[in-house]
Image 1 (cartoon, rainbow over the protein chains, first blue to last red):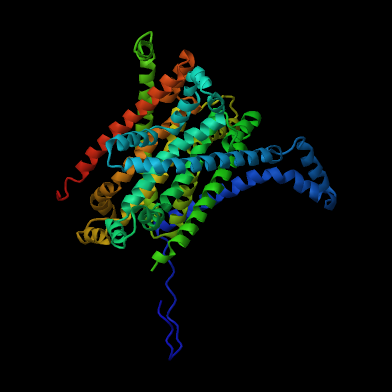
Image 2: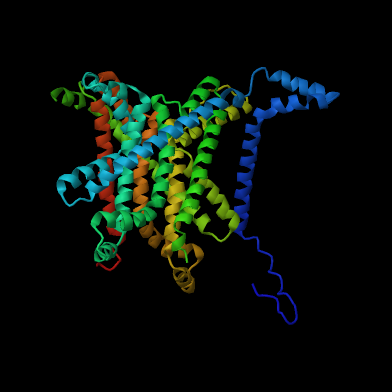
Length: 303
Length: 237
């Protein structure tokens, strides 16, 4: 933009109106479609609130409106979907948070030795770690969960004799175990990639200053590596949240499990739409929070 | 050990042929999804790369939705949603037919949505890797916008996007396992049935995992070849 001329105070001419190109028309049509879809979805979900709204309005209504409202209320002989299942969804949300939180925590603890072994010079360490990572990244999470939950049931006598049967009998423990193993493989790769990404000069510089290798690693290399790893870690958390829906298949009542239960009882498609709303809100919130954290932690790198 | 081999053999005694059919379904589902996902992903990347803000926003809403939803939920939304929608349409038309959506098609549609939203990101970052001069050069030679896109930009774009697309293919291959939950007889479902009947879950799920690993290995070696082929015009270093 050209600034107004300070001597004459004249402003530049206004920009010409934007032409209605084909792309602009297409964009507007698509946005209109999204808006229609969004509004009809919101209207569909707000149908849950019809009863309380009508009840609140009842004393204010008179004449034809009152009879109409009474007729509408008479059609609601039972509670709305949200009233019946809202609390269940909240419970499911907490279960999802538990599964994801525990798996990420155990996965993070497990990923450190795996990453160390994977980048070790000795093949006895690096080969098995490579196989571990390859296995857990190359097979579907669902198959891994089945392998642990149903598969370990084959070894019931052995597990009972070493006193671990209580663990593998419980679907919740099995899911957390399977997810931890899975995410530890991914996190190990993230960690290894981030540490290798640090240039050799950082090690040499620290060595020249007389720092020992452990001090160099924890005070020089790791802080820089974690900065690089921040984004992939965020993606991994999101992947884990999305992957946790699989737990519903082996009878865990997380958000997805409660959704399936509600749907099987009511055949009301709302069940799945509410689940979509919940998952989208979790993932979007996390993504935004993570962006903030990243911007805050890397603020010294901004020019 | 012998017992396990008998269970896995082909023929009357073993489950080998059933599992092989399952592998066929898994592979054909992912191969059938791939072209739709790629084309849709490319179109969305074009929309995101355009200078028109409304088009960009529409494409971004699409990717936000399908990258934020769990794949399993997308699958159920498509499977039950399409079924209910069609049923309502049939009711409106005054017919009394019960409609059941094919789980293969539902899986294809849902996986194509997910794949395309991730692929659009891959294409978009590839678009950013192509300098403006390539377009200008094309126009200077008198090529139309379409010709510039197909003859000059697209070949370079594919080369830049290939590594990311290779990863997405592996993810797609793994995601097909989810379709077993809506009743498609894929690898995981066939092995689950075998596990339940024979009461040997560890063996059969272990075999399923190994087959998925083999499929991943075959795909990555194929991708290495494709990448080498796509770089044949570059200077060998």
